[in-house]
Length: 287
Image (cartoon, rainbow, N blue to C red; front, side, top):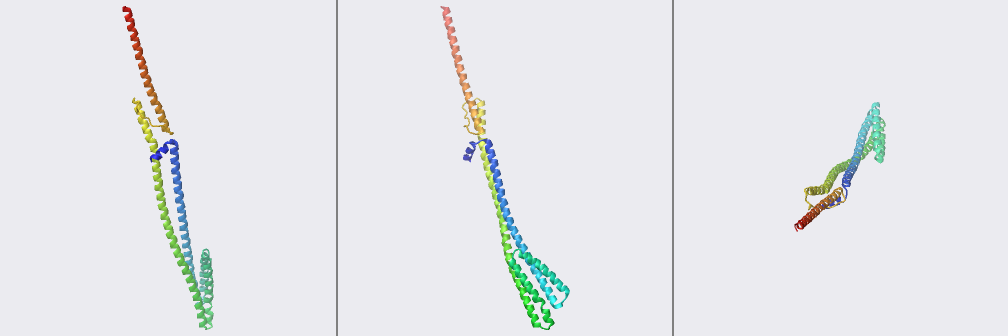
């Protein structure tokens, strides 16, 4: 602190105040930049987690709509009702919409689901002809093949959902840790800036108040008539220039006192001389 105070005494007060303000502004800007960067990074992690949840939602929707397709195709094979066919087509349209969403993140999975769904639909709609021809073996075989395609879709969707669930949990944990880290970093930076600002402010005040107090004390002693007062040393700042002025004032007081003593001595000499001359005249008249 003393070394910093001595360093500050080599500069002007206006420079010290301006430098302190600039340094604090820089620290504030740096703190904000770091905090914003941390928040932006954490926001990207949150967005990634959100994207994973969207994928999970698309997979859940595809799984749900495929279950509807399977139900209505089975009902169509057994009932041959137009309403079942219409419902199956509507469910397939909804399934295709979810498959389109899945394709944005995993085109291969979307292609596999589409292929398996088409194969399932083909095998699920053919058993009615076999049953109509009283060929239950062929019909049951087609249904078994349709079931295999259905299970394949369910297995692939389940595997993808498990993978996305693990990734989403990891992303959420990373986002939470990032938020905690950003909060701690912001607190640490705030404390560091506060401590730095406090230390610099104290050093700045000491570099002004201490020499100014010494200067004020010296001025009071000079006004009281003391000539042995110690004037603060000279310095490049404003207080140092005031100390130089006070030193000149002290020197003028000392010089004035010397001149007064010299004048008094000369006056006494003249008075003595006058008295001596007067005594001489008296002696001369007496003779």
